[in-house]
Each structure stands twice: as structure tokens, then as C-alpha cells.
Amino acid sequence: MATRTTVPFGPQHPVLPEPIQLRITYEDEKVAEVVPVIGYGHRGIEKACELNEYPKNIFLCERVCGICSYQHSDTVSQVIEMLWPLDIPPRARYLRTIWAEMARCHSHLLWLGLFADAFGFESMFLQFWRIREKILDLLEMTAGHRVTQSVNVVGGVRRDINEEQKKTVLDSLADIRRLSNDLIRVLVNDYTVKNRTVGVGVMTKEQAISLGCAGPTLRGSGVSEDARLTKYNAYGELNFEPIVEYEGDCYCRMQVRARELLQAIDLQVEALGKMPKGEIAVKVKGNPPANEAVFRTEAPRGELFYYGKGNGTRHLERIKIRTPTFANLPAVLIMLPGCQLADVPVNVHSLDPCISCTER
Amino acid sequence: MENIKEITKNDIVSEGKKLLDAGAKFVTAVCNDLDEKFEVNYVFSQNRGVDLTLLRYAVGKDEEVPSLSGITLSTVLIENEMKEFFGLKVKDIAIDFGGHLMLAHDSPTTPMLKSKKAESKGGES
Image 1 (tube, chains in turn purple, orange):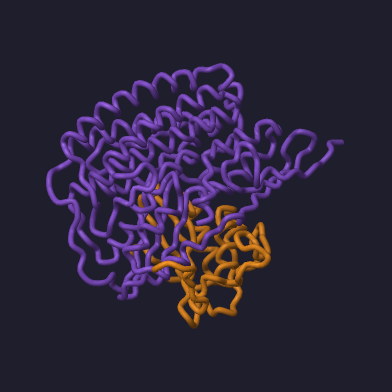
Image 2 (cartoon, rainbow over the protein chains, first blue to last red):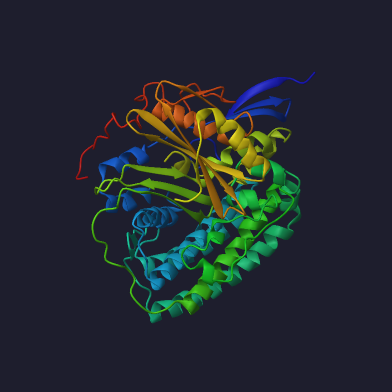
């Protein structure tokens, strides 16, 4: 008879950059049950939004997460704009798209590095992070900051990309594409990588839908769903179709992110080429009306959902944030049972968990 | 907002099941404090995530409400969160964290209620 042992995985663990605990019950070395335990760093940001006049909530909400901070500011700006609703200048919509895809690039590069590190491929970890620095440089040059850009406002954006910057961005993106392609080719073809990821942590299409998963976790299980299909920002005018893999294992989730990295570069190049001239913001008059709205964007980890409710004053009555990791966390209930103890870190990383987002 | 379907708490499980059976995916739930009662919204997406449907019901603050976690585990976390943050009395959640999914044992209780005012901890707000 197998020996049952319950072991806490986290909240502090070498592969976890943020605090979450998985209370895992093993039968010998095989996972039998798992219960996720969160709440180690909840910051009450939804409640803190009540303190601020609505324009300041953009700067608060973009601090929900350090990696997808851009998407938080984009989404909260647009949920507030929906309360009027405001018509945003086309150039601002394109600029938001370009920065969103830059953020996707740096997030996926960060994840690809961490994923390689999770199974001991440390040189690849450093190579991916070296490329990521180039994207952060582009964000700094165009938006003013490497991590928390603070470039969105209600009504548009605060900065523009001029012709000289555009040329620099295009040159650098070509470089990033070449370097990323070289590394991705190694990652998807390497024997050891395949050995550690193929057939590990399988989640079927039906399970992924039933558990309410989002983003690459969902698309790695064969579900062609992406908030960019709602055609917000400039996505309706770009050549976009979600990237999908079908086996539902760690290898597929890795492939989705690797291909999305290259797709994000292509989307930036296309958006820079099609970006119309014109204003970058509209003047906003009055307070958000007493109304409610939902706005969703596709953050690097999946669909980011904001609900906003105005009451006619400068203080919103309610902001509700549903982050992708909050949606993906129940997946561990399906993915982990049956896997080996040694595969737990790779499995957990394949979800790209962001606890900072989850504990907004 | 479009596609809001007003229902009662007694219909939430059957209406939710109808949507799920038709291929919808649960997105999240949103609880609002309307002073005398709660407004609860369950959000589902369809058509590759493009379309949203909100199932909305209002309920007295002392009333118990059913959980959808019996038909989809995707609601477990958000139902625990609504229970903790608002004091919404969700019964029979498949995994009940007993009021401590997000909140610690010494945390303020039901912090999202309107009556619990947010307080600035210094600096201009």
C-alpha cells in the first residue's frame, strides 16, 4: 500500500518567485491531491480604489502586477472610458496595441527563461532574459519607463512614438525576432526539454473550459479563445488569429507562449506600419456617469477582466478585477494529481502563475 | 452593458448549467453592495470568448445563496472571495476555505462592504 504524505509546496520555494502554497498529498512519489492556498500578500487594491478620484486609479491598478502592469492600466482606462463612453483617437488605439504587445514580449521572455530554469536549463534562462532587456529598453525609450509605464490616461495616452523612435523599434524588433527564433528552435527540439514536458500535466480541452482557464493555459489545450478577438484597441485592423496547440501538456503551453512571442513582434511591426497620424488623447469633461461597464483585454497570462461602476462623482463606486491567474489556479486540481513529485515545479510554472495579480 | 439576464437566486444553478451545457465558459462573479441587499453577477463567455452573458440576481444580506461549484469547479475561488469580502452567505462551496482564502485570521472581516470605509495610510490620496 502506498504511503500518503502531505507536503507544503511553498509559500517559499526555489521555483516560486511569489508566495503561494500548494498543499500536496503524495502517494509515494505520485501526487494524489492538491489544495491551493493563497492569501499571503493580498493588498486590497479594489478597496483602495474607493480612496482615489478615478484618474488616479489607473496608476494604482497598474501596480497590481509588475509584469503585466501595462495591461492593467490599459484595461482600467478603457473600463472607465466605457462608462461615458468615450471615443478614443485611432492613433491612441494603435499606441496602446504596440505597448501591449511589447509587454507581452517581455512577459513571455521572462516566462520562457523561468520555465527553462525550472528544469535546470540555466544557460537558456539567462539567454532569454538577455533578450528581454532589449524589449525593456524599447519600452523605456517609447513609454518612458521599463516596468510601470504610466502611459495610459482616461481618454488616450500620454506619449507618442516619433519617426526616429519608430525606426529604432523596428530595427530592434528584427534583432529580437532573430535571437528569439534561435533560442526557441533549441527549446522546442531539445531532447531533455521534451522529456520533461511532453505528456506532463495534461489538461484536456473540456477540462480547460470547465475549469474556466484563460490565455496560453487555455489555448495550449486546443481552445481558440483570446480577448483580442473582441477587436479592442487596433486588433480589429491587424492580422490576428489566436495561437493554439492541442495536446494540453506543459510542452504545448510552452509552445503557445513561444509562438505568441514571435506573433507579438509581428503585431508590433504591423501596427507601427498602419498607425494613422493624429491626436493621442481626447479631452475628458465631467465625471464618469452613473453607469457600469465590463472591459477585457488579453494580458500575457490570459484574459484580464475589469468591471467598473460609476455613480456620477469623481470616485467610482466599484472596481472589480479578475486576473488570469485567478482563473487558471483551479487547473492545478486537474494537472497535478497523477504526476511525479519532480514534475510539480514544471507543471506549476507551465501556468505562468502571477500571485501578485491574483492577490490584487 | 449588454446581455444581462435578471434572475432569482433559486435559478442561478439551473441557468448557469444551461449556459455551461451550451458551451459557455465561466469568467468570474462580481458582488456589489447595494446597502440593503447584494447584487450578484455571474459572468460567462461564449463564441470564442467574444460574447459575455451576465446572470444577475439581488439577494438580502442575511439570505443564503447556492454555489455553482457543484457544476463547475471554476467558481470555487470567487465564491470563497465573495463570502469573505462581502459576507455573502454562499452555501455548499465544493472547497470551502472557511473565510480564509484571502484573509488571515487577524484580518478585518468583510472589508468590501460599503460600511467599511477604506482608510488612507498616509500621503495624499
